Image 1 (cartoon, rainbow, N blue to C red):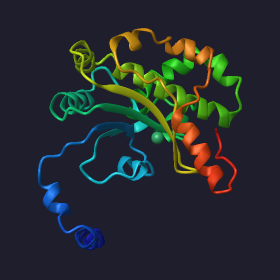
Image 2 (cartoon, protein in one colour; image 1 turned 180 degrees about the vertical axis):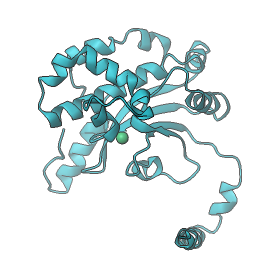
Image 3 (cartoon, helix red, strand yellow; image 1 turned 45 degrees about the vertical axis):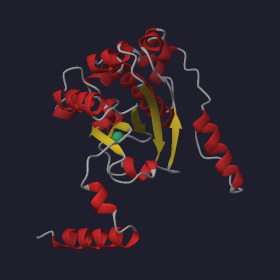
Length: 239
Ligand code: CO
């Protein structure tokens, strides 16, 4: 089976872009200057540009299954270095999503595939705190692990030498932990928000966060509540 339909869609897309903005591709051919690095899940429903409402050129992207930050992942480390050192991004956003299939697999005790090895940091966290997670109903447990995984990966980004070096030099670089709800299209800011070595070092451990889940009430969350209230609709789930 050929994929001509994808080329047809590509041509239609390029034509529409040019109609809407005749200089669009002229600008795109120049140097990119994104302000954000997005580290997200490979899930086909969570595309950074769409979720953020950004055009091509505005966000640098790294995605993998369950948005995991492995300390020896050369792909991710090179992306972080390029984004921070050369593109000079000011924000690194680790964004997971509710209902993540990778996270769900952690609870299924499967050990045969490469993906299970990939998910090992989350599996280890689950095993360590199994009593806490298993006390929750299945849906809440999945939501909670999706959230805690993001917090864990933000801590791991904060330990990448590129990030430490940027902070040591006084660079303006902030790390964020967000989660996307596919059921309502909204982002929630989970924290932590880290902008220096001092803020990182003051952070409680991920184990502490599992045992004492205090929900932060962020500006992003308040904004979403107000936006839904203005529409006369009940607030989305998880607010
Ligand atoms: Co996912």
